[in-house]
Length: 107
Image (cartoon, rainbow, N blue to C red; front, side, top):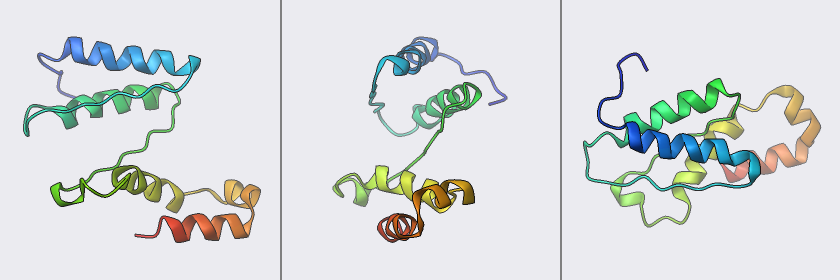
């Protein structure tokens, strides 16, 4: 992200700390707040940092009407990832597993 992130140093530090702790086990964070306060930008900074560290970064979004769908945002993020699986990975999984994943995560 080209522009500097103004006024979010403490929030970004918390997220980067979670990224640092991921090597010791699963870490989950929730980012919430009113529309327009910079959540997407903050997570964009974190995603760029994670990508630089070699992490796989998945991104999912849900519209207001989708918020009641169980794991809808996770499904959206995984759908994009499964759709772009490399030939090497898909051959390691096997054709049946790849077909199943693509059926589950079809958009």
